[in-house]
Length: 219
Image 1: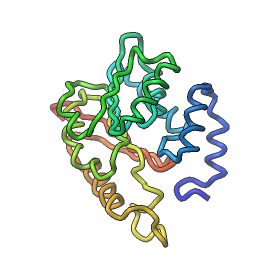
Image 2: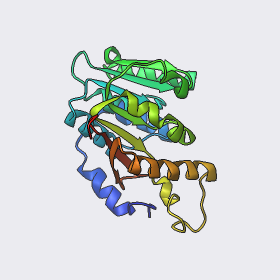
Image 3: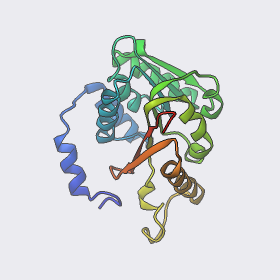
């Protein structure tokens, strides 16, 4: 049984997903074979729904990996829209660029290679949506800059905020995750739920997804 959502419920939700794409399916299989920390299709659909709902034309992603979540996001963009996505590992960047090309989205994706904590200082906002799925220990240190890059009404979406339930004291009898990562995520959850610039909710889908709206300047 899943720590957050029971397996039967997750399989039911997966059965309802009618967004089928051969490229995404191939990337998901490759990610599973390589044990890469990719989102799953249900979170991918959530990202596409959110990007569509805010009419996103500019999206920032922290943590490209091999392009799986980026394809879900870029697929919501209109012609002329742009996804800026950041990845530390040059080998993954090469694969991601090839995957964006396969998906027919290369013209609306810019992949930046390097430390996202440094790269975010070089990009200009505003963005309509920011997806944070990079190093968990950088969630907190990067928060202020990511909020600055969002337009009022824009969304900050963060993956893994429930961390197999380990952010909840006593919920997991034998924690398996890195304790420093767990602490970093728990601290981040407190910050996004108390930051006066944000209105936040957490969706217990897969490993937990937080959705934060940047309030208007007068809020």
